[in-house]
Image 1: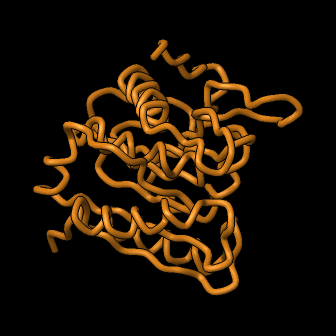
Image 2: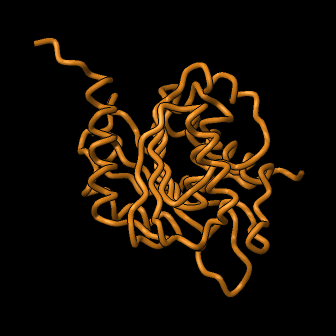
Length: 221
């Protein structure tokens, strides 16, 4: 498979300037198909302020006339090649190495971005501390990091709408079997929610992220 384009560092949206980042944990946002770095960045006010939030743009252009960007091609409902998802994950990892460094980052992805978030965790378990997957799925196949994940069971939040008809049922079912084996899974299926994000889901994501911060910085008092 040909090389995947790299992420453009000039279009990244950061919640704070470099002078205010210091050693704060980084939460990387990965948007969905046909969107861009501005989309999920709107969630920043709902997320814990301790995180430095960075929202990147996917490197591919979907077929015209679809606007925005994509992480990997989609051809029909079942046209989601796991190898293409892995190439996208490796592009994310390359950006993390250049822009963040060696410290693990947290990932939050929606739809395609959720699939890439999980695939990035699978591609390099040492580079990702946790993943939030909203209306996303686990790509098929096996990666070398899967055995590491099964042993470590890193925290993953998986939220999806009960009325979401975008992600094929077979992928949802496969993800429901894969995640409990390879992660410390939490999450929720939201009644009536379509392929989108609700306030209830944001509240649950905030609680999940607050818990990650609390575990990373236990009280000494």
